[in-house]
Length: 445
Length: 155
Image (cartoon, rainbow over all chains, first blue to last red; front, side, top):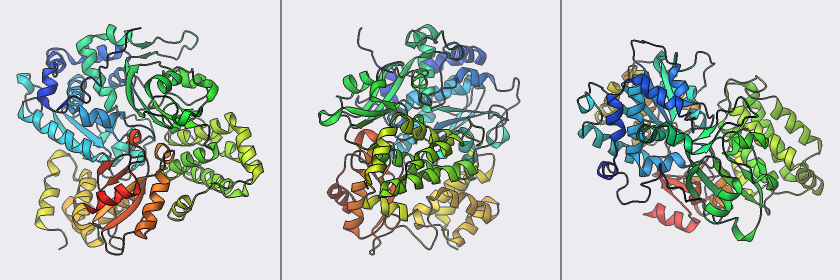
């Protein structure tokens, strides 16, 4: 098979990859020119036909989301760009923004024309200072070149793009949490329905799309639906709900590998291939014990599940929550799963917004139980308690407003199911692995 | 008056971007926090007046984010965030935090006695390919050791 030629990462590491000149030299903004000659509904139909599934974690088809907007709405309609990338292990959007901001801006402009929006807010996490400055400069270049602002390229289409910085809260990546945060409130996710497409930002119809999702849009216009669907994996015939996993995808690989990084491949590469061929293998000549398939919310693959294809369907078949953000984190065979799970639970407990009791309390209790195990006071029945707490929180059992709790529960369920004997041995041995740094931080809560 | 005219102008410059002034809560808090190293209750009232909402509404949002410091715990000259989430923790992130804590004689959340550095733990900074990583204010540094962090901070 010929090596895959990157599309989304085509300009990465080129000199001046972030400048308008470099982007234009590669044919940049041709998709916008084309889009401006097309009827908005035709663009929506193209993205829908391409089955571009959202890259932010949930995998909802972007084109279908766009069709949920009310027809003939007098406006305004808003686009919110979700650049609050915060799922542990995930950094693909940062690379897209830092290195190729114009690809994103073109995606935003095409999407706004398609959904009849004249205002886009790009909600970017505060920690991405460099991305913010690169985007700010790129947006200014666009206004100066007539690619943003009034009457873009003489088409009569107006578009303003505003950057809005977050303040270090994971929950702002949940689309209605993001909207609340943008409105100047605490980022408490909203009860749905109404979905944002009906009533979103400032109570107006709103589409929230991830950075990578929007970056795919100009390529669909330029290269066509058939090209997009020639990459990836068709729907699984045995699963009528699987829509297929088409297009290129950025995979982030981190943790215990020799060459951590971000690679672009057609959807469906296996975890093993990513680790062996694209990340230089597991470090120090060790073996992988567990692999996170798509950010910690998705749970874990065990060492004998590494041939799982990382498309939207594969991780589910292996008992994980889904593909998530396709952030692969490798844990080597010298690392305790008790320690890894503690880290995951501590993250979720810190980031739970506190609105729904099962999540606020559940994440904290799971963390405290693991703390107790890790100071040598664990009991075997603690494992059942962990599974019970995990099983009672989230959208799936119907006890929370958003999916954060499902993402907090999944690593617990997977770890105890797939690595139970290791947890039992840990408890029986009376080991203690809580470190001074962790005790410091536990005290600083 | 706590907010200078320059700060007020920067806040007012945000208004045209949004149909509702309340959306300027986060931008305004960032502007004030960057300049004054905390958001005092006096500053909060002055922001509220500019945004034409109640100070309690701003405090409600501000306290949610845990990012903004109130006047009892102002930030030092530089804020150093050390990532403690999984990809960094697998490659020494927590040990890095611990050694900085010892070097600077300050726990996470604290500020050195001379006011030069505030140390924080952070959740995933999104630079996992360069673990362990830190932020100094909002600039990311990757694959760092405690010695390198000291050099970066002294610059």
